[in-house]
Length: 181
Image (cartoon, rainbow, N blue to C red; front, side):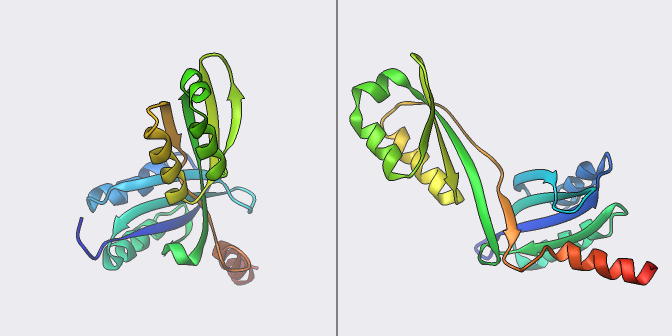
């Protein structure tokens, strides 16, 4: 990874069409840029899907990737952002050994200190959930891993909204409506 690479988040809006995810990821593949995380969901606009994609890159490369994605027929809008331009959250799930959690009270204290919640307990395992920024999710993982109690761990891809009042795609769709109306 080059020293001038930063983590960028792309927000891509598209019609809900089969195959669009493949077209979007192919742009990254062709430019040999790894996707760090990917989340796809319905957006706040009916029949429009939102792709939240993170990748380490330099700004010139990410600008080109965004432009190429936006040229796809079924893509409505694509923009890239740095972390300070977005409100970002992820979820981490941690499956811990019940036996180790019960024998070491420091594990429960660590969970509370990280403002995570225990969502399930059974004789075999304890499920802990943490919502927050990527670094907070990872911080809890590293802390729990010190106790050698983690059986499984995963985190979601990031979800993000811009700090603007409405999604940029809303403005774009309104303009398009006026042009065709």
